Amino acid sequence: MWIPLFITGFWNTNTSSSHLWKTKYTKGWTTPLYFSKVDKSFFAPRLASIQAVQGDLDNIAPQWNDSSLETTLPITTNERPAIPRQHFSHLGDTLDPSLMDSVKKRKQRAKEEPLCIVVIGASGDLAKKKTFPALFSLYYHDLLPKDFLIVGYARRQMTQEEFRNSIMESLTCRVIDGPQCQRKMDEFLPKCHYMSGMYDRTEDFVRLDQFLNNFEQSFPNTRVDRLYYLAVPSQVFENVVHHVHESGRTQRGWNRIVMEKPFGKDITSYLQLRNSLRNCISEDEIYRIDHYLGKELVQNLMVLRFANYLFEPLWNRDHIASIQIVFKENFGVEGRAGYFDEYGIIRDIMQNHLLQVMALLGMEQPVTLHAEDIRDEKVKFLRSIRPLKASDFVLGQYRDRQNPQRSYLSEPGVMNDSHTPTFAACVFQVDNRRWSGVPFLMKAGKALDERKAEIRIQFQSVPGGLFSQVVSSHLPHNELVIIVQPDEAIYMRILSKAPGFTSRLEEARLNLFYRTAWEDSKDIPDAYERLILDVIHGEKSLFIRDDELEVAWNIFTPSLKEMEMAQDSWKPILYDYGGRGPIESDYLAAKYAVQWSEGD
Image (tube, rainbow, N blue to C red):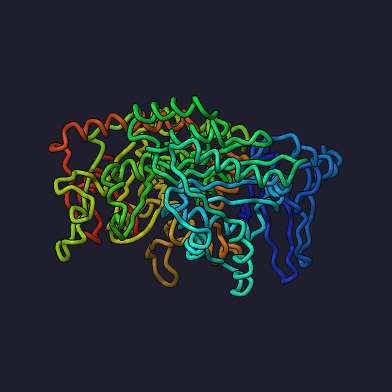
């Protein structure tokens, strides 16, 4: 399949299979576009659905919409007749859901089936701040089934009015105007109901089931599905899932259960949880959510790697010197001290969010874009990572010497002698052909100098001394930088000659800022919106499989046990609130001839 790289003026005379498309703009200048060969099997399902592609994907050119554009088709001696587009139309009916399926295709699958959504733990912060706003956003974007019911279930006693008022406070419309937004809220809220009940009492779940059945009986001749969203602590997962299995299943459609981390504290506790849940629900019914996988730039990692010919030949130990994954927050634990003091930054951020990002960066190309193929490759990569030791880490804990009440140890619910780290940096070693010898550096911390999550792929130094007379020190590394949050962007750090009568070399950036590149970037969905939509459609690419989580815990458990069994030896280093974190993290990177470059 021929995919345009859009590299101005690029010509390859040595590639006999190349096609040159002569494209003339009426403004008077000509741009040759080189088409390079990319494996068609990976993105063909997505490309087949784009209106710009007509006929057989191997032989048909993009039909440009710009009327000012003239296109010369490639001339070859072995062209086959174009296959009409309708010959591909049957594929969507026979394939499983795919990561790159269009929203239109997803809506067609799920629109006609009534749906019950039950939010367990509906009175908690997670449900009010994330789950209900995501459901409302899907509603005003017309992405929910036309017939749906939302039930909030929690232990707290509340009237229907109190419940609706509590969730209305967090509902927002990103792009539609005030009156239209209010109208959508007025339509949405009556579809939300509340039921009080315990998490371990059978009769309460029987009442819940009866309430859902009353709604489902309005649709006697169609499938009706149930989605349970568990916005509750992991300690009650087993009770809730057991009662859903015994009293809350529908027999008329699918049953799916969404679970939030943490999934255990180490490999032992995770396996206990997994084995207990297996008695009630199948792996196909479990959706383990990691909201980082729903972030726009994280979703784009596979496209960046596998849809662009430029990057994949360089994506290995021969060309990449190091990979850095950094997560920084400029605030403390803020009301989560009870939970955080039990788990710490390694379990809360690194073992799940950042390791998932690392897997997408390091894995091989999957056979297709379907969930099991993608997750198979992630598991293979994770299995090639060496288990971490305590010596692979630098730990820190924030303090505020100007305002001691902001120090971690002053947070309500934190023990005075707590050794829980609020900062951690570590280095991973990967034992496979692609990545052997390339350090993967990971850093996460709270109460640092800025809020940012980013990925930095640092390339090898330029060999030779061609510019030694111009640059006194060594040439800086090229870097591909992917900013996940807060301002989504991708840019490349390169070296360029400064303009004018000078031989000075300066660093420059090739920028792709989402806010300016796409009009649609003003309405980038929240990660929870994308993930809940995927649950409704049965698309599991962005959810964590059981063996994937098992391998992840196998990587981290040895170091966690080592640090917690000898806490005095691995006491976190104190660092100032609003600073960069312990300087020892720089020494850790220097051991691998790497310098942290975030902020550059």
